[in-house]
Image (tube, rainbow, N blue to C red; front, side, top):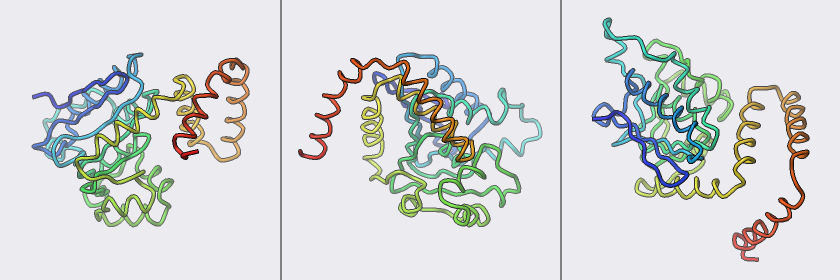
Amino acid sequence: MAVLRIERDGELATVVLNRPEALNALSNELCDAIVHAFRELAEDDGVRAVILTGEGRAFSAGVDLKELANPDRRPAEFAPDDMIGAVRDFPGPVIAAVNGFAITGGFELALGCDLIIASSEARFADTHARVGILPGWGLSQKLARLIGMGRAKELSFTGNYLEAEQAETWGLVNRVTAPDELLPACRALAKDMLSCEPDALRSYKRMIDEGFAMNYGDALSYESRVSRASMREIRTEDVAGRRDSIQRRGRDQTGG
């Protein structure tokens, strides 16, 4: 059985981690498959958004500890950060549909996506300190930036579980849905994003991600440079042509 599958719906692809019997633990084989899948999708001009989820009752239980403890295990084909890098490098929106447990490496994988939508059955935990290893896929840096230093330290220094509703309150996840509404909600959100102008959507994602790694002053200067360069390429007739659809959308959403 394949450890990962890709389902396509027009410009939207859903990547499903498919080791339910192991709670989608991140074996070498599964990590390699994630890298291959996201690199392949990034090269496919027909795919502009991705949903990442897990089969069964877990998003991912993290690195496969049985494999990690095996002295004869083969080295991963890719460096450890390549998996998260492949997810981050996809040029369009990547939505983590967290259907169940997202633990340690699985938590980091969800954080590598652009945003998280969680089932009410989702549970998050960082057990690095309890296992005796340190994170290397971004959790120690991104989590504190999302929910604050104190909350991040509480999670990471205890290894305790964070329920979906509390994760939403803390700003870790965008919203919480009923389990059977998770994927439909993610598909609807992805297709809403795909109704934006394609080049602008890709550029906006890149602007946010690159600015996130800078200090505030440098990020503002970066935004200004990129915006000015973009404005030089925009044709006024294109903007005028989009104005009517934007106004109609506004009226539909506000009832005006």
